[in-house]
Image 1 (cartoon, rainbow, N blue to C red):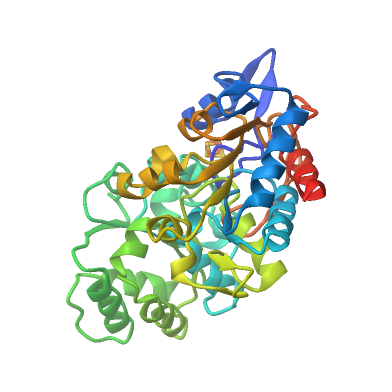
Image 2: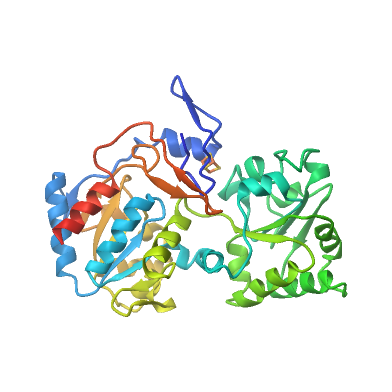
Length: 396
Ligand code: SF4
C-alpha cells in the first residue's frame, strides 16, 4: 500500500499477517490507528444518519453569505476537484495549508520559474543535497533513506559518505544536522537572505560572508545537486521569494541545482496542482474576485471576519491555527468532513465522518516532487470524501 502519513507517499508499505512493514514510526501510527477515535455524523451536537448530516450541510452552505472551503491537503485529487466546484458554485473562497506553508515554492515550480526534479532523479544522480530550514527526521522521516542521502542510485553507488555531500541549514543543530559529519556541512543560519547572497558570491568565486565556499566547489564538481526547502527557509526569506528564485536560476549557470519543497501534508501539492489546473492559482482564491490574494488565506479571512461559513475537509484548524485566529472559528458555522473526531469536528455545526484516504479509500495524490501516485487502500469504505462532496455539490 501507499502510506499517506506525509508527502513522501512511500509506496513500499506491506501488510503481512496484520503487521505493517517498511513504514517509519509516523507512518506506522498513521496506518495502525486509523480505526481509533472515528468522527461521528452530527448536526448541532446530535448524532444523525449520513443523509441528515449531508442535508444539513447543504442547508448551511446554501444559506451562507460568504463561505470558504478549507483544508483538503490529506484528501485525494478527485475530492479536491469536487471541492473546487463547490467553491465555484458558492462563489466562495478556497484555501489550504499551503498559503502559510510551502505554496509559494510549489507555485514557482508550476509556473516554471525555478528548476525542479523528481526524488527518483535525486536518488539516482544528486551529489550535493541541501536541507534548508527543514528537519526531515521528524516531518518526512524516510525522505533521506528512500530518496536522497542513504540510497544508492544509478550514478551514485559508492555509499553516502563518498557519493553524497550533505548540507544542513538550520537555526539549531537538529537531528538531521547531527548527521552532517564526513563529506558534509552544517550551517547555523541567522539570516537566510545573507546566506543566499553568500551562495551567490561563492559560486561567482567571490568571498562569501557565510562559510559556503567549500559547498560551492562541491556543487561545481557535480552534474546534479538539489535543495530541499522547508518552512524555516520560507519564513527566513521574509517574503523575498524572488531573491531566492533568482539565486536558483543564477546558480544553474555554475552548477545544476534543482529545488524540491520538503515537509508537508500528504497531498498539499495535489491541492496546489488541482487548483492551478482549474483556475491558474495555487491557493487563497476567491471565486467572486476571480483572483488569489494574501487576504484570502483562511487565517486572514477569519481574522478579518470575511466569512460566515466554512466547509473544512480533513484538517483541524481549531487545534492547529494560532489561538487569536482559531477562536474566530467559534463565530462562524462549520461543516467538517473528517475521518477523525477532531476538536474542530466536535465543535462543528455539522460533522460528517469520512474515510482515511489511502487506507480506506483509493484515488490519486501528488508527492512533494510532483509525481502522481495511485493509492492502494487496505479496506474499502463506502463513504469517502468524494462521495460526500459529490452529494453536497448535487444538493447545492
Ligand atoms: S515517510 Fe511519510 S509516507 Fe513514508 S512511511 Fe513515513 S509517514 Fe509514511
